[in-house]
Image (tube, rainbow, N blue to C red; front, side):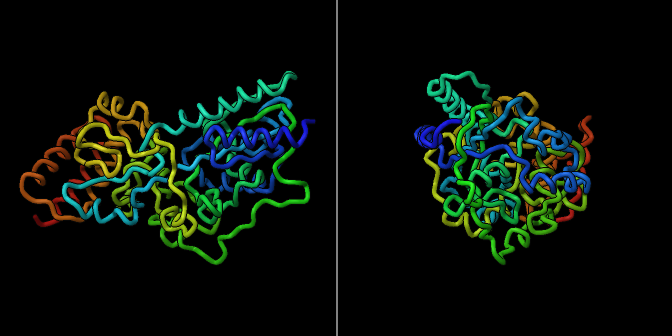
Length: 370
């Protein structure tokens, strides 16, 4: 087994590479894994079949001879207003705008994390001469990163189900390195993970528009706006559309209202700043007219190096239509005519999710007086 100085070297190297937090933990069957099967049995995973991979609940299956999990966290909080503060500029504004989740404003976080994780892997190979297996995962493997992060000492799992750190809040990307190297854990055997500091607060539960947080620490992903706008490939349930509001990719609301995020530091990573596609278009509050009018080729070009590409073109156009239908400001004149014509064109789409979403939005807009 390696010495404690080796673990200290890993933590220091991670910090030098730009990670804000790092911890080391043994791959055990933590209590959180016991609850995962019940969560799946309730159907809360929706259409996310990949969550049924048995490796998520049994770390021993992740890698032959796995002995150590290194968890790294990277702050992505930027100085721009949160979605709850900016809402007055979205559905209340003209021309109508949409909201893309904060984590997707900049470069694809997978790429940013991979670069740093792979640099840490290279450092491990330089420091340790003995043969060992190692793999870096940036939200890409069948790994419950939050659980390992908690038991590595990085924070606690909040009532909104996200990892919360007392200093950084929940604006954290998590990446892991799994390896057959045996490194001493960050926490001593006598130490426990950080305590749950959520207390009696339930702001995240009360603020969720769709009621996806069915109980403290329990999310029904089928109702989550992030799931509805990103993971769901079919039509969005009509009873949830109005609550989705102006969200076109993901949702930040349960994080926006969290007290621990109010004092979270601002990231120094330039890649996470809101990306400008041209002089008039940014991923911060983009125009719904632009989003809904994108061709499939234009979508691929605009979001080629962005996490937004996960929703795919048809999903984004569907989401933009739903957001149009939720626009509360009364449109008139050329703007209204332009948007109605755009929705009428999309209503004729051969893709059913686009066609029926456009039809729904058109009906909502036409109910409003000019």
